[in-house]
Length: 505
Image (cartoon, rainbow, N blue to C red; front, side, top):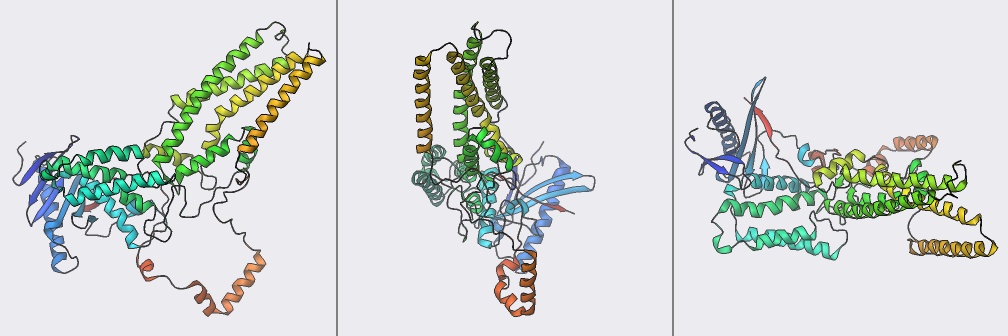
């Protein structure tokens, strides 16, 4: 259809179509709906004039301090059974923030963290939404030398953090940071204002993808309880092994203990670290490939061993036959689980959005990712039991016809090899590490609640001296009391979605 007067159409570098109504010193409006439709255009202009009218009135009354030419409006009307409903948000370019004219339910922005009090902390979450807006509508994004330097400084700092620390909180790994930095270096300072759309997106995409503001918000940057390493919890969560974990860990060759520690470095405070998760998944995939190869060899060895006429006498009751058959079943189970994990992509959820939903579903409030650790340890444990049972079947078989000399020689070799294996495991293990049945020692142990009688006496003493009660607890801080505290524990990856407020006339 014909493009309405005052509107211009733009194509996002990725192919999406959006429209811009830009009147200098008056109004700047973005929308993705088809304004060539007269009915849609009438709704857009109606909401545009109404919202800008209320904003001008707020400026005249002194309710807000800003210049209208620095503001952008995004509209997204849609119809339902109750009429036309419009979602919107305002953007302030200079302050890099989003705002609304009504009270806005910010749980979608602040719901990633518990105990958010300070306005300086909330500012980081709002600024992260600004870069998402700039990535969606890059046509008015002005690329300056200061912005390019800001992006470079951000990338260099994150790269340096990775190189100097093994537990960096940066959202991207070193390879991704280097790739983004090489792209930003290609921006020619002499052509800053040419091809502004693609260049603005080139600067906005690294910021939106690595999301330093969002990452800083999730890590409590600038707050007294800032997270300085990726496996550090801010809220004091502590892993406590369940009874099933305590009993199954020795039976599964202690593999769940190693997996649960690695998983809890990837998923801390219900926040998934794509860097740590990628490292864990890469190691797990390599391990599964090696286990599948060894399982195939061991499966063939058991079949060949049972084909010996003296071993498989047909009754199936000897220790040799039972051990070999059981070893065959364990190796088969290891192969099936390894292929299943790879086939169902249970080890390939490297993207942040996929990883967080998967880890959230597998996580338990008290025991964390314990179930997932047990699942991932099954192929390894099955293969180890298959090897031990095959060794048992082989040892029993050669002990039957052998004389004292052969039994002594082979038995001595088995004892020496087994002793060396046990000694190596003992020497290589971390002597300071906790036992598998103990809680995570990184945080102070849970204080046991005193008996009921002692608690009643303590409360009676507090009630008899009310001034002591107020002095010990104190009054709420003015800033904390005036702000909203959201206790939402929704797990998220380091990415955002566009946030709008529904507005109906």
